[in-house]
Image (cartoon, rainbow, N blue to C red; front, side, top):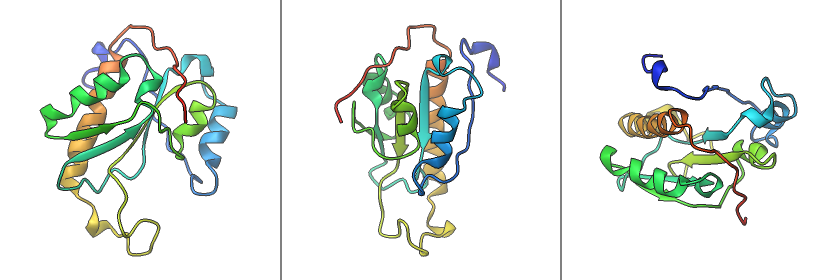
Length: 160
């Protein structure tokens, strides 16, 4: 990683399967972690980030589960031309919920629903690749901000 020297925390990338069958992959991970769960400070979940809309809205829940999360996620969007829709709670129902249930801070990020969701018509030509690149830069910037910081990453429970 070109910016490794900036990191004060480790970054672990994990891909899960079986989300639609009941979060099976992420549940397995938190029940059988590769590092102690106490060392995992935040889980950032990207689920459906390929269909950025014309309003350039990136939606997320869980930003209130860590100190300064709502403000951070709001401020990172405009420099990239994005309009973050940030919720402190609204943790949702994707893989990050398995971590939230273990008192780990989370961000569940997506670009919104669409008519093809969960249908065979949801095909690759519908992906907004330029928008997805913007969303990925936004997420990368959030990771770098958190991982290059030494501030106390404590879990803040949110009302569902």
